[in-house]
Image (tube, rainbow, N blue to C red; front, side, top):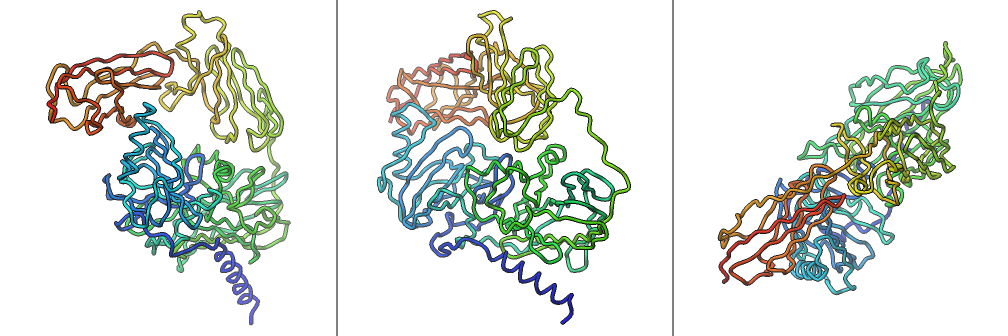
Length: 567
């Protein structure tokens, strides 16, 4: 047998062994949560802003209200209703120790809905978090538990579905037999080579290099031969598409080898929520901010303890000496075993030039492992230890009420505190001040601002430009489906539009004839909705009062009278 054939067989065995690594789970325990074809708009482990996606996003035919069923016996262990995030979410604890989660719902069903409404009225709050006693809301496999929706921070109608283990770690639902048809190979956007450490280079350059991918007849890729020396790492931008959808979903596994020997295996099978933000150290964060393409770095960068990394050798990096020849390979796989391979031939060669020293004049050095305090003009910056993943030089400049706080190309893991000395502001003005980060339009976006005396402060995990802003405009309230003094006997709901152009809506409270009414806030449409089925009122003549407050305390009161026949 030739050496080439032996090497191929060894490589195949390594890849097959690595691909088989997945937690043992009950594959026939959970049924599908909906009785429609399962087509995904998002997969488990998919790369999202500041986190890995923790479940499956199941398309709901571009509509809301599709029934959601319990996939196994259990009981409702948690219910959370929020304006943002998961919106209306439901958590079920199952008899086998696993839990399932359903998010962005439009409504709960049956006894669950009745329980939630009762508690919302009791606490006089739409946003609520509940932990029913075990078996209080027991469910059987196949029971109707909710209806799909678009609540919270959802970008369109769908069901977000999770399966979590006994330690509340999300796991890939496909491991449990949730079958999603997929006969498409993963798609490769780009591959980047990263010189790591002093003296390392790729093609005579000392910065990351994007490689040209050359398609092969068998569907794999090669790159042109790299000339390199020193410690080198690689990164890849790849995604998967499944049957019935064009969404750019995440891949299931990325396996790397060097000359047939395993280097790093990244397997999207399970992770814990306390590690999910390390995604920002896993991807090339600066490249993402500049190019809006997430490159997964196939080596373990400093301070990145992700459990998704398997079988890592030398942190996934390779060492190249002059005269050395080798092949670095990347195999990308989706859950249905569709794979794509990229081979990168490498020749060891010393660089013909020397790296240029970067100019750090005027920059502030910040150690990743030490607390750092920096004062610029009226602004103070406190960076706790381990807020940053690596030591870095930051460009921080202040002018009047504006702080240029570096650029958002360096990830922040823990909150940094920015403070502003507002001693030169009159006492009457202080309550209307806030610190905001400028958005892409150059407008300040409100950050939760704390005040102690004449010192204002925020906590942030994003670099960028921050300004001291003032909001003196009160929110606006506009009735949508009724008019003051009119009959609305045929209305099923009462809807009002609430808007605040500056600091944003903080709270609202509505009553009819002095009785609290529950209003659901859709922040994406700026609409409050009351459902007359709540049966709060029994009078013909009704006086509505709505008070809306923005984030700096400006308030608006809206009052109107409407008439309604009572059955």
